[in-house]
Image (cartoon, rainbow, N blue to C red; front, side, top):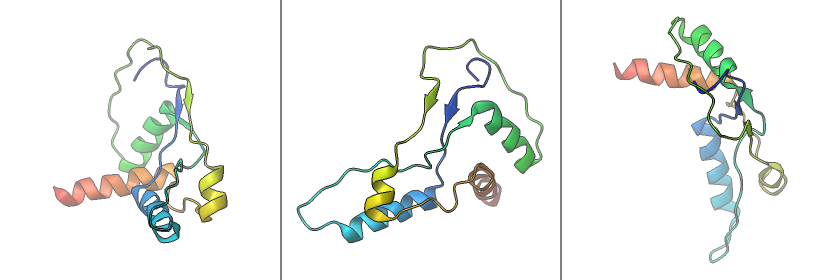
Length: 110
């Protein structure tokens, strides 16, 4: 992890992204185009991601802390347009569900 884990990012479930894509395809006319930011609009710290992953997976994995790097402290999508124009809201994008579904998919492949 870069720095102390306070950098904030957002995580959106692939199923929610697919639903936004479906709505965009169904509501866009041939020859037209629109651009949307698809995301939760809510950020979590990298430390929260690690703590949640440990809780969901029940694995007490180690973390390597690297020196901070020159990067934005917060990266969160501005989602008002996709919500207003498509009525889209993420339904499966809690951090617990994103990590849990990824973990179950990974263990199902084993």
